[in-house]
Amino acid sequence: MKRFHHPLHRRGMTLVEVLLTITASTMVVGVAGGLLHRALRLEAASRGALQGERTALVLARQVRADIRAARTVACTADGLPADVVLRVQPAGEAAIVYRAVRGGLVREQAIPANRIAREAFSFPAAVRFESVRGDGVVSLVGTGGGEPGEGPPIDIEVVAALGAGARLGEDQP
Image (cartoon, rainbow, N blue to C red):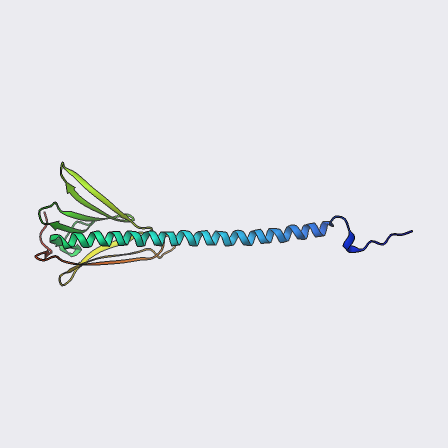
């Protein structure tokens, strides 16, 4: 007597079914991997942008405080050395110099015992800085990034009002 096997009561899978299952699983894993890669790249870009924002805020506070306390301020147009973006001379203290370096700015101030205090402001993209003077204000402007491989676009403008009695464009030693 012949037995009739219903397709739902089979034991095991055919080779074609196994290959189809493996192919479908591979496609799902491939799509998930691509999405994960995109998500990680987006997260890294947003982390870089956030770092740039934080650095810009700290830089803005420091520049404004330095310019408010300044007796004299020299800007890019005042014939400063090529790497110097801004030079601030506070009353009774050593000059504060903002230098352009690869990836940001460095604030330098001479302190006692012939030492120099340095504070670096680094950005995730190459930023070009310049300082501009106006009517009783000084602006520190930085632009960069946005191109492939340069990181997120960065546009910074810090505007600071001069303190009472401060002068612009004075000859600096």
